[in-house]
Length: 221
Image 1 (cartoon, rainbow, N blue to C red):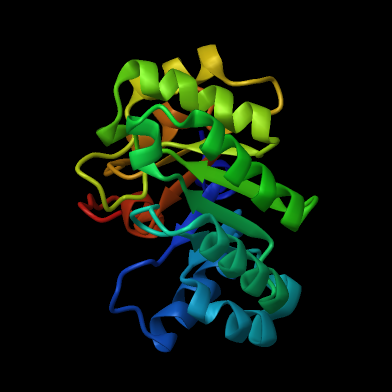
Image 2 (cartoon, one colour; image 1 turned 90 degrees about the vertical axis):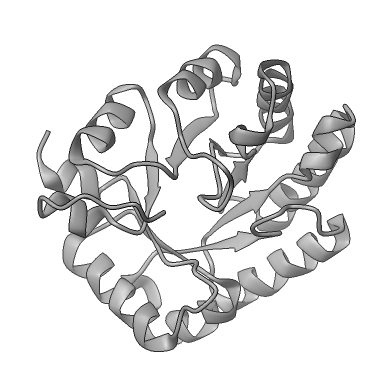
C-alpha cells in the first residue's frame, strides 16, 4: 500500500488544548500538500480555516469533545455554529454515562437530531471503546446505525486506550450497511495504518501520519 492511499483516508488531526493558530495553519498546509481526507480541528478554529482556505481544505471538527457528557442542546448548538462556520464533517462524542445506564434510546435520539441538523454532511460518532463492555459496543453499533450517522469511530485519542483490531471486527459484525468505520488513537507505525485500512476502516484519525510515514514512530493521537 503506497503512502498516497494512506493519506487519502487520514483525518489529519490537531486537538490538543494548547493548539495555536500557527499550528492549525501548519496542519491545513500539510493536508493540502499530502491530500489527506480532512483536517480535524477544534471548533474555535473552523471559521478562520474556512475563511483562509475555503474548499481547499475539508474541515472536520469535534462536538462534545472529549468527554461527551454535554447536554444534547449544547451539542446541537455546537453543531449549528460549526456548520455555519464552514465545517463539513462532525465527530461527536456520545454520552458514555448514558451507555453505562443502558439509555441507548437517548443516545440514538441525540445522534438523530445532530444528523438531521447537518443533512448530507458527515457525522462520525465517537463511542470511546476503552470505557465500554462488548455488549455496550454492540448496542452502540445499533444506535449509530438507527440514527443515520455516517461513521462509528473507536476513540477520542484522549481516553485510556485507542483503536484495536478486535473493536473493528466487532463493529463490522454489528453496524448497518451504510455505516463506515473510523479508527483513532493508538496508531504508531505505518503497519498500524495499513492494518486498519485492510480491516475495513474508511478513515484514520491521527496527528502523526506525516511523521510516521517518514519512518518515525509516535506516541501521539
